[in-house]
Image (tube, helix red, strand yellow):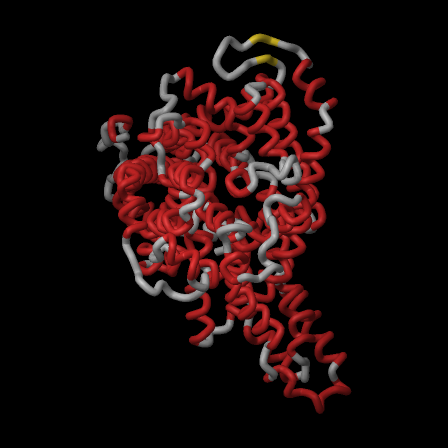
Length: 308
Length: 297
C-alpha cells in the first residue's frame, strides 16, 4: 500500500492554492475506488450482461439474447421462490419487531442484573450463520436431537422434513440470530430519549403503558424504520442460514430467491438464468428500500444513516 | 424532535388530568418487557448451554443422559477429534482471510474517507461519496456470479486471495461512511495548524486524523472482521480443495460428514466461536458498538 504513496511534498506552503491541495488529496480515494469498482460495481453491471448470455460456469460465454429471461420468467419456480421469500420476510419481521422493541426497552434500563442479562443475550451476534444452522439442525433432529433426548413427543417432530414446520423453523432461527442485533439498536435509541420527557409525563400522572405509547414509540419512529429496513432488505439475502439448515427443502418449501439463484447457477450450471434471478433480487431489494423510505416519510431515514 | 416532545407531553398532560390519583403508575414494574426479556433470554441461553455441555459428552453418554444434564463423565475426546480433522489449518485460513481483508479494507477506506472530507474539489469527491453510499445497497449474493467469473479469469480460483479481494470491496462502503463521519468531527483548526507547520496532507492523515479517529477505526475493524470471519458464501463459491477452507465452510463440511456424532459437531461449533468469544469477553462494549456501526451513533 505504501508504494502507492507519492513522496511527501515539503514544498506545499501554507499559501498553496486550493486546487493544488485538492490534487494532493484526491488520489487517496483511488485505492478504495479501484477495489470497489473491480469487485462490486463491475460485478453488478456484469450480472446484467451475463443475464443475456448462456454460460455453464466453465466453458465459453455465448450471447443468448432474451433466452435466460424467457426461461426464468416462464418457470413456476420463480413466483414460488418470490412467495417463499416474502412469506419468510413478513413472518420474521412480524415476529422480530415487537420482541426486539420490548427487549430493547427492557435492556435499556441501567439495573445491574439487566446488564448481566445483556452480556449473555448478545452472544448469538457472534456466531456465524453456518454455526447456528448446524446447531439447530442437530438440536431439531428427530432421532438424535432434543426431542428424542427429553422423550417429548411434541418436540420429536420432523421439524425440517415437513414444509410448514420447516418454514416456521427458518423464521424462528432467523429471529434467534437477529433479535439481539435489533434489540441492540433499540436499546441504544431508547437510551437517547431525554429523561426529562418521562419525568414530565410522570408529573402529569401518565402510567407506564401510556408513556410507552406516547413517548417511547413516537421517539423511536426512525429507529423502527431503520430496523425494519434492515430486516426486510436483509431477509432478501438470507442464504447461509437457509442453505445449511434446509438447503431450500423439504422439496422447495424454503427455496428463497437467493437459493433459487444458487441452485440454477452453481448446481444446474445455468449461469444465464441465475444472473437474471440475481438482477430480479437487486430490483426487489431496491423497490423495497424505496417503499420503506416512502412509508418512513421522505428522506429522514436516509439522513439518519448519512448524518449519523 | 422538539414538536414530538411538546405534543407528547401536552397529550399526556391533557389526558391525565382526571387520573391524577393513579399517578404512581410509572413505578409499577415493566412486567411485559420483563416477561419478554426473561422468556427470550431463556430461548437464547438454552441452546448455547446445550452446545457447551454436549460438546463434553461422549457419544454414548449423549444418548443416555438428559440433554440438559451436565456430562457425567466429561471428556475432551470430541475436541481432540475435531482438532485431528485439521481444524488448526482451517483456523489459520480464517485468520489469514480476516486479517488479509480487514487491514487493507480499513486502510483504503480511511484514506478515501479523509480525501472525501478534506478535498476542495467538492464535485468530484461528492460523486465518489455517493458512489460508496449506493454501494451499501449492493447485495453480495447478487454480484456473486460475476465475482466468480472475475476470480476465474484472474486465476485466483481456490486460493485465499479469492475470498480476500471481494471481502475488501464489500467492506469499503460502510467503512468509508462511518470513518468520514468521524473525520468530519475533527476541529478545522487542528488541520489548519498542521498546514501552518508545513505538514503535507499525507503527514496530516497519519499524524492528526489517524490518532483522532482511532475509536472509529477499531469499531469498523471489528464490524468487518466479524462479518468476514463468519462469511460463508464467498468460500462456498470460490474454494474447492479442503485444505483451503476457512472455518464456516469447514464446519459445514464436517457436519455433513459426521452429522450422527452430535457431540463432535458441537465441539467444532464451540472451537470456531472461541476466538470471537474471547474478544467479546475482553472488549464487549467496543464489539457491540462495532456491530451497530453506521446505524445510529
